[in-house]
Image (cartoon, rainbow, N blue to C red; front, side):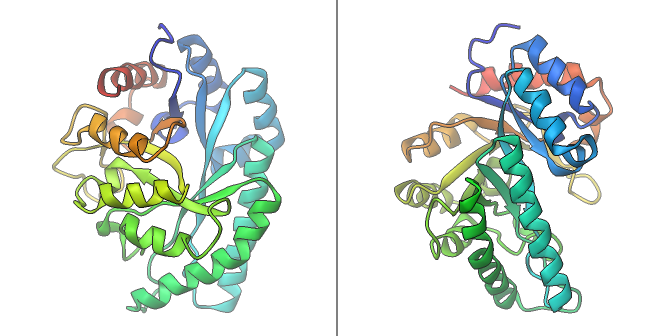
Length: 278
């Protein structure tokens, strides 16, 4: 495959999770893909230092590490464990050579109905993690998730909420992730992207399409680019008008894609990227 149009393309590892790390690296090389977004579980299984060498030797750039977060616990022991795990995530990001750790903030603790309290505990955690990340050359990127995930996965549902948290801290410590799958429905999101751009807080930009019906459990409902209702070029325009010029990751959770040959999915995703971005 020609590398034309792929300079900014980054394949998020979850899109082709059926590929092992060595298989992913080889496939990227064969297809002319230069950027990858990695996930902690396969990185830990392969070893962070070994992973860093693997991607470095292949000439790949790690655009982000997913994921930190889950910072809403009330129990002091659980909170301490979450902070320790996030410090490890920062360490892993630094080892991999990426400056961006994506945060999924966490849902409501069992038995709680206090959204405001959960968001304030995220802010408290960021106050501890932000300076630690800065010392390691890593930025924290709060990712708002679609509201259907607010109870169990992420109480931060809009870019406005994410920025309200991030703006309590320096932009080089805490910013946001803009993911089309999670924000496409929000008519205030373009203005919030502009707000994030003014503050230098767009730390990563991710693409996934919205298709219906959603599968049972909804987590694996992200559609291949071009299969759904999201205007990718429009959202790319919003982030670029706001000053973002970095890599564009494609991150898909999709059982149908995972059941296919991973190299085929990677090639298809790269082709869709060039077709539906500018």
